[in-house]
Length: 340
Image (cartoon, rainbow, N blue to C red; front, side):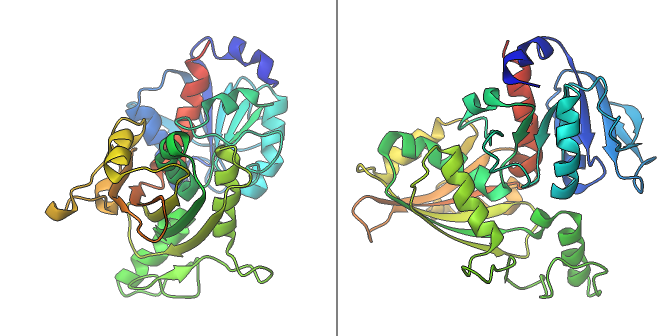
């Protein structure tokens, strides 16, 4: 579907599908659609042949998960994909050719020049340039740009240094299962890393060519693309930590113009999708426990970075399964649906 005809489709209550409905993010998409009371004409749940037949509840009704096939998208207006890059590469073009707009949560389409990469609070206009596929950014990237875009828009940015503290749930159910088993003293049936997760910190897979992990490269590429700042100077280190509930990020931003912590705090308090929790003397600051099951990006520990001329330090946390994946995808759907 080309961008210039989408208004005709979204001028009415729409038919939606979730592809990968039985997975960790797919289940969260179902929950978010229900919580937000997103207007739907119908909801179709799709998954692999192995998961087909699973029963799931939505708005008091029992829905049976169907098997994903090339014929699954007839009559579907929007499909929320959370089925991994391989299946997305195969089925997203099929869905788009059938007149269905795909909002894809995998990394398969994020850097494709004809596929917009969208965070509704940051670059909503990009969503309307789609040709049938819209990409959902990486979970860590989403919370980063939601917190930083207001600051960069007001005071500019010379350089950005980010260190992440990521929940194993970012790797889906397999990451959660490994951590849960290890905490209980059991050997995990499936692993996302050969290292122990419980009581440990581990890195994502490291690229032998440039010594960066895929996660670190994703954050740099995607942040530059979403912010339309292809030359943005960034340094990123991504780490998995044994927590459930969300990803934390330590941010050091060097702005072009002087900015005080109080000015940044006031601006962020008024910014969409952001909740400021910044009274560290009273032990008030963002934590994964607070973020768990919620949609905002929480920001705290806003203070001056004395190592550079115009420097700020921030600590942010968001639920990686919700704002970092499912909620952002649903917000993109609503962005298209509510604009006529």
